[in-house]
Length: 261
Image (cartoon, rainbow, N blue to C red):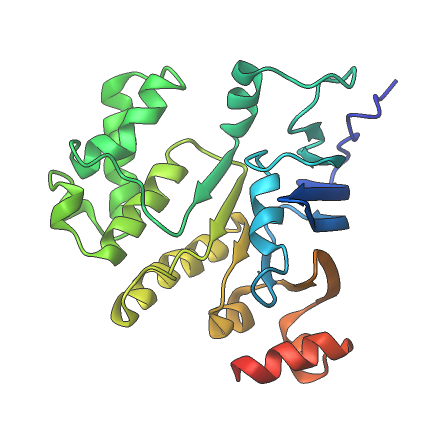
């Protein structure tokens, strides 16, 4: 029998499922009964005004924010609970998080390591991958993000856009089922934004499942399969980009879009 903490995973089932998610931070309800499914290979972009709950929702997907009620499932398995409903320990949580790549606003690279070491370190240390195999995989990933020639550089020798591309390669090195991006270009100079978005476009073409918080509306329009609009901790609209931008149904969506166009 399937537990209440599991979702059976038939073919075509969502890779991410959020059920009745509620989160309170600082006495304020920042997620208010949120439900969301993301299919395998989809790119889902979260937009909305500051304080809408976008980043909190994203962080709840790998339990960086703890829900007061509700549940998050990745590939049918709760991110936070055992099949019996008990909270899992740190070791098991770390194991489940391995399947979820997270790219933050700031790059958080190890400054004392080379670019190559930053990418292969976690697969060796966490996954137990043989070092030489991990190094070869890391070189391939750096080539994939256009940085193979920077393998022996230190992060301090790279531009912000290059550092963010290394961060993406590092997340991909763990072979995640889902990639989460929290405003990945917000800390970059304008001329560096495009190089990071192009890597993300390529991941989308390769059908990597992605959930992205961003204010880059052109990227959202061109790459997203669905755009989720949030306001006051709730999802107020969920539609394909062409439909959402052409004829938003919610008045709050219309007001938000008018401020960014």
